[in-house]
Length: 389
Image (cartoon, rainbow, N blue to C red; front, top):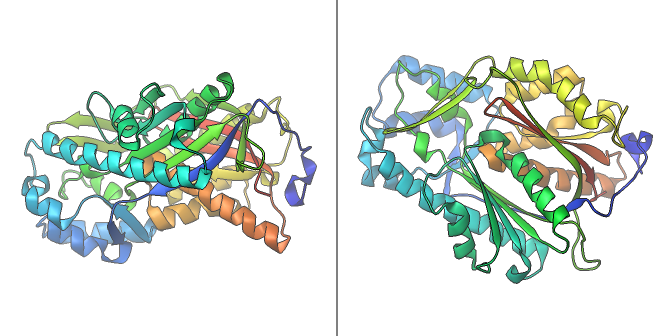
């Protein structure tokens, strides 16, 4: 034990699931935040100066610097109706999105499997998460076929879980790994904003928040409860998990699938609602665990970066030191809010951060919390042990 975590007694349970590898993938289109506004208004043929100024202000406040998106000039050339207000385009959007999320999930999974170092045939379960597609058979089957997994791989799909989907997927994958001895669970998340892409409108100024904040991509994780010594190198141990929704908040994060695609709206009160409830949720998660009674700054924090306001509210409510959310803020800066995928990017950042601290002999936190907030409003949380340090 080193640094902050010296106040917490180190303890592991051999039955707990471990994260054995991480992976990610992105579409080819890289968007620099500094050039987003001009490009977006040009591609949608919008000349509303007031809306353009509003989006410019929003882009500066999100702290996002770069993002990847599926949308491209080629897509808009082939489907100009996507940039036209009021047209029934859900079929075109889903045709593009369904293909894109499968391709990205496949690439992220292959990257993860390569890092893991074991054959595809060792994967026994697949958990697939996406809020960006609507079809059946679902994306879980398309991903299994795309990867060439065994036909008898056991599949689970989580749909329309939004920003909490990545941690929800970890929770489900953890349960599968722990209740099926010898299993190896592949968790894949994949998201694109194509389904919600719309031209700017004075009647929908809140749409600009999504334009300034959200990105596309995929993430992948492999989990198992019994890592093979010398073959598998665990990154995190997942000790316990909980989920909770807040009654009467279901309209705060609202999305509806319409003939024009997904109409999505975030309530302005979202950061404040999270701030009001996050400490109680964390106390509930830590109660009767090895970290019961630990100071919040003794822990690491892998928090889904829903936006800079949410991260600031969590930091302020819990009294966290500025560097405690650096992995989350870096993910937001580099990839935007990529919905369910983003927690994978946060965990990758945390792995790299832990390695740097270990090499420099700096303090680190061995135990911590993985958190996300999504539609419902739903809180997802996992108590985890960092095995990198």
